[in-house]
Length: 177
Ligand code: GDP
Image 1 (cartoon, rainbow, N blue to C red):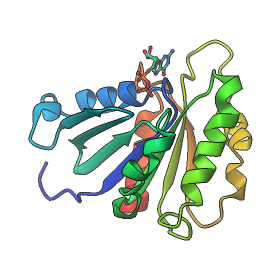
Image 2 (cartoon, rainbow, N blue to C red):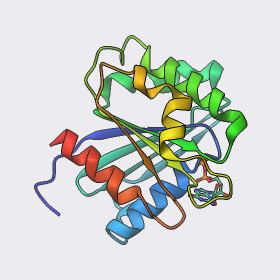
Image 3 (cartoon, rainbow, N blue to C red):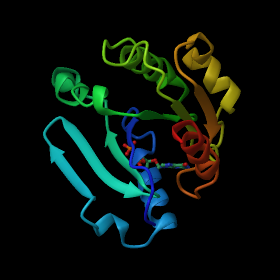
């Protein structure tokens, strides 16, 4: 603790991709009790869900993008204040990969996001689940190779066990240093 750079990371992804589980795993493995600290808050508004917490000098803001099309403008306001994005994908949910891809493309093409060199970490989550697609497969399904204005990295992860989260977050930390 102390002296850590404070950055704002937006955590986006469809519902059920594992965002809440990932945030819980990250915070409990980092420092017990941080979630109850002054930086932690949960805002369960109708149609949107936002969670704020601090971990390792990083300030996280998590957004659940699904089912919030009409309220999109509410959470899009935070785009210009963010320093990085974690996009969580359920790699076992083959059918909704195409939905995840269009949400990702919508976010990347937003005027407050496009052209900014902010790091994008994609978590191919639920790698422990049967029939989970590999990280390279998830990357190609999402069309990540077409992203040229941002450094991006894809990581297989299990938010349940924490496997892969450390690798992903340390890549992000290196980009933000
Ligand atoms: P959110 O809607 O994106 O916040 O997703 P949640 O964190 O609520 O997770 C949705 C469901 O997926 C829950 O039942 C979790 O236990 C499960 N889940 C989340 N991460 C993983 C994972 O890495 N592996 C497996 N097998 N299940 C996961």
